[in-house]
Length: 207
Image (tube, rainbow, N blue to C red; front, side):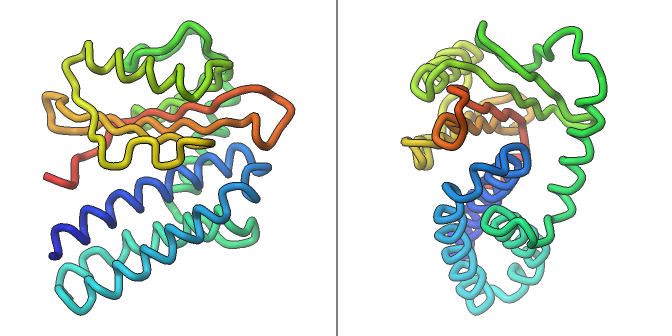
């Protein structure tokens, strides 16, 4: 039981951070993503309560993660709520990065031909960019590209936000990390017909 709860907690934690990053970069999306954040927070609190009663020791170990995810989701919903430390650090890294001229794109990840506003964090492999490609085109591109890398897609949460947001997870890297691809359609909240793409690797906590 605990393993299932932890797996779901990890997924909500990942989605909470991706949504918070998106809202930090594009505040106009807050009104559209608020309902999603509220649903995720409700389930997060349910998981925390179940875990607290089923496995108190594990709940204690995960308390910081639960708090961080809760703060991220609160930040998505209301701009006056404090951000988590991890999001605050990410925002600062993005500010520093924006002050530098990006002469070439980081090729650690495959990129489509159409890329705008490319940024990379200072101390991680996370990249972010915008493109005029559609959600479907981007999902197809990364499914093909990472298949060529020999990775496989974890289908459980694919297309969970198919109308405005897609979260893709690919596994099979030699170091057992996973690749997370978050794509959101900015056309729903601005006059720019662009999609925002965020990629990074992280430890596979499901193993």
